[in-house]
Image (cartoon, rainbow, N blue to C red; front, side, top):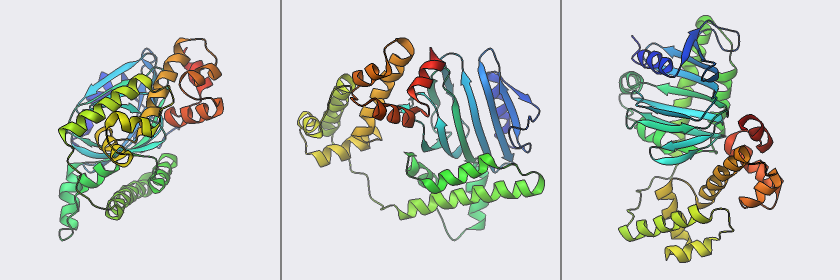
Length: 319
């Protein structure tokens, strides 16, 4: 029996999804779950191959802000998010669209606040311990590869075009029967190959140990950005606050926050923009200026990159 299936049945039922018959929108080889109209709208599709891997497609939205809190079974996961809006709390970071994300299940509970009405659109692959601890180990016994480390090295990136192409191919595939099973198995193998190859090409280095003083200075810089993200902020200004050079600041900030300073500032600005778009009647041009962008087009471009939808559409569906 597939050890993940009980989890999905319990997990999806808990969040008011109901198993339904195939409707032509997704490959009939997988199982299709529909979100209760009282909670939201949309579908969750999953294809499982025995106890080896799972392929998932999310395409649903909640009527109101929704808190997810659960411990996923042990697995290695990689997904592409086309659209999403929310906040993750373990540790805290904004949920971003238009990126490839990896996740190691079974380590810590996943806790996130999903923002209302913005669709969660994603396609992902999960491989189980039976696949990477048993199947691959037996098949490649003389070629030990730390897949957990390889998956973890992805974290969140916008620069993995090969994986995006592969996941899109899976999303659009409509084959059936034996040929479909072969297709999905081949794509999972290809995805793992791409992840391992990417890890091997990455320059290996030991993460520098951050001193207590440097950690405290980065916390000061982060707190300052949190309070002033909508104002013009320069690297030189932040370096003075941190009492360190610009190169060291950029490196240490990224190690502690898992993103660059520019990405962090943009995430804070987009979070404020979401609030203003959904809670006020200010024009998009006014909101753009309030969150730090004099050019509304540039603001719209970054907002779409961050959430997967344009500001005017976000306002329309959330107000």
